[in-house]
Image: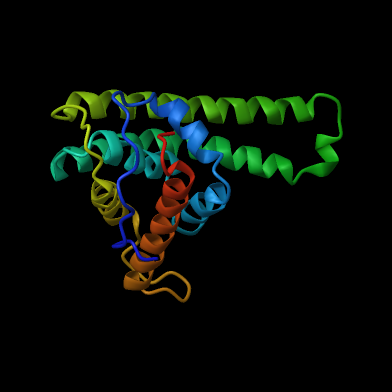
Length: 196
């Protein structure tokens, strides 16, 4: 599947679900966390923003290119300066097996993980509110192509302008688009006949 293969419309809901609740339910789709983490680890993408592309593309497909770009940029500082360092700390602590056996260290790592999740929830709250304010209104007609439009803008903001490893810039764009399409297909397959 490529990023240009757009799944057929899903069952529509009258009301957009809370972005955080929708994200938690969607993240539980079998195989989806692995695809999203590939996008995060290979390209430094923010999983919240990838999920936002799907959520906003489904319920708020009318954002302009300028609105979308501004919204995506507005969360980058928070993500890079707050969430990413907490994630790095949590991952580093996982590798410190000698220290983690000491009393209290596991609970500190758990507290860091909870704090990381809270920073992601705050980012999502901001994204949801800004999306609702910037949109011309909630759509009752799913537009699966909107998620791809939003992702293309996000991908352009994020991808490095030089080859990474064996991937050219074009290769990076293609790989990221393929992973996004794979994630969209997993969501579509899970939700065939019902909204998340």
